[in-house]
Image (cartoon, rainbow, N blue to C red; front, top):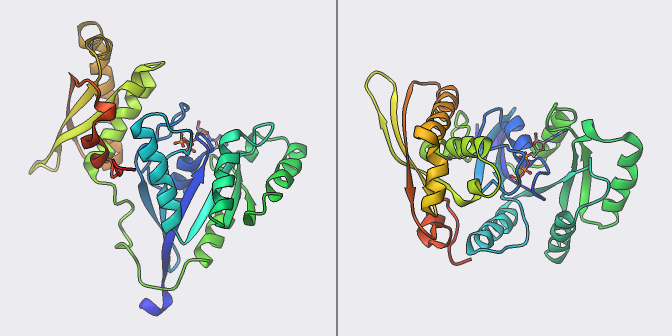
Length: 300
Ligand SMILES: Nc1nc2c(ncn2[C@@H]2O[C@H](COP(=O)(O)OP(=O)(O)OP(=O)(O)O)[C@@H](O)[C@H]2O)c(=O)[nH]1
């Protein structure tokens, strides 16, 4: 019954590491985005679809908004603002466990003030925040005048998340569902599989190398027995990086592949035969072809 349903988009913006992916994953109840301790890892605008009673909320999990350096970074920032512009509601997430409001958040607030966009302010990580520190922090943000409502939550342990969800649901416009209600994500399986492998690259390799690597799923073949064969390539920029990615006697790539396969089996709930290759492709970071795969606009 369409008259009784509501549906809309919620953009989640915030500085890198504010906890955007953690929140979206919690509300959607399905792993759609990648959580890592390293910053600036979310490259794709991934939507999670959340059902709350008769309301459907489509979350746009935007990339962290930061100072663009490469073309790729600029495309990401552009995608982040676009996501906010299209949305019915914008949630600004702030890491409240910091001593003061960080520079990235200030920059986002300036952008929002310019566009006269009101937001739902979400102070996150209250589990790791001193109570006395929270009020002055909130007051500082209130001064910016951009918040129409403020919530204090822990995306990690779920505190306050129900209230936030109920509030967002109430504010969604009336209308038919935008996605079939049982569809939790529109992220293609291939892209999600690539993100899973990329997360394992991040977990195992340190410093700059993960940022110099990208993963593509070249083939996804469903077998009759219900399993899937997945072929992926990790692209790096130089021969030296390829050596590190492969490891001694291929030990590193084997470990990455084995961990990624386990993750995929859990998430896709099926047997996965995963084959991961490493190839050198110089300058992939400035190659416009790459942005298209991520749904980003190369001309941004
Ligand atoms: N203590 C605590 N940690 C949290 C909470 N929410 C997220 N984190 C942690 O903060 C880090 C960053 O979380 P993400 O969800 O990846 O942050 P993000 O905003 O999506 O980051 P980008 O993708 O880089 O923009 C992770 O280590 C999370 O485990 C919270 O409520 N409490």
